[in-house]
Image (tube, rainbow, N blue to C red; front, side, top):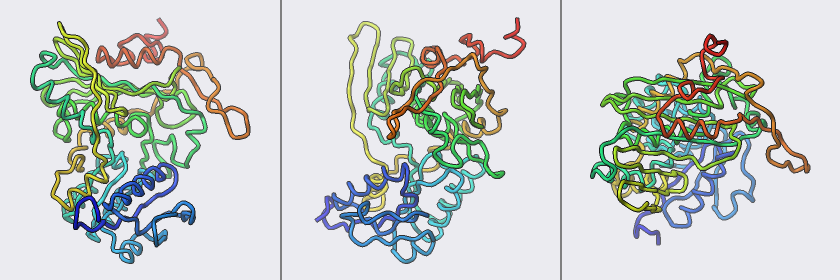
Length: 395
């Protein structure tokens, strides 16, 4: 018997089972064990092996998504495919009456996002966008603290992401590190893909989630790697109600760190390490208080929505503000290459051959990312020489 009593497991098709798709496969396996879902199909150019599918029972495999949906009777499709494919695949599922979990970012442009969201709404199917951090119960808890005045009047939100990625990371797929591929938008940049959660979570804590909530976006986009997209960037969003949200991120950190969002107030601050669901409240005349919160998985939330009417955590409309930021990045000038004296190479992850991959490091970037989140400033305003206009650098 399933956890939900008489509920039958919902049939799921996984689209894109390689790379990050393996995480979704493991998650489907977990929920299958709880009787919530069952894997009925896999759509991938490279079929999964019998070992990878061990314990799932009969699973149909095909690279023809529409045919696979019809043959399996799927009720849910999990899309974990290259960013430019999301809209067309989602609309194919929607036309078949199949509900969706779509990996983030939902689309590589605002126009594609709008096309996908409108088509989903017209078809009447349910959809979660895969910003898993927004399933954290800490998000509601922090909003409650701010609303109750725990840190005084809100004074802006900052987010910081200092990650390390080897040069090989940008060769993981033909679209990796690209802004465009064969004339099609991709937008595989630090703020729009690997650290997109920092942007979406900061906006959510501000209560600015819809497209109409964004008034202005300032961008500073840079790259240390020999790529087309950005790997070291920051944005500052001015919202429709006048608040400021600044997000700074890099894939060229000196030391990898947990990304976080900090909510500033006139009498304190709340820091949220969103991958850990960990919250630290620091306020005037109080001892620091740290709590760890639960999290609702977004596929489980989608299943609960279909069987029990539970509200969705991340429907497409709740990512409109994020997509306005992505669109500003898309429309911005191509990321500026950092001067060669602004970065150096360092050993990366050990390889299976016993050697070491290389990574590019921007000295001082860890402190700049943290300072941007603390002060809501852009890199240029913090005095980073490589972020200043060319005429200012030559003075």
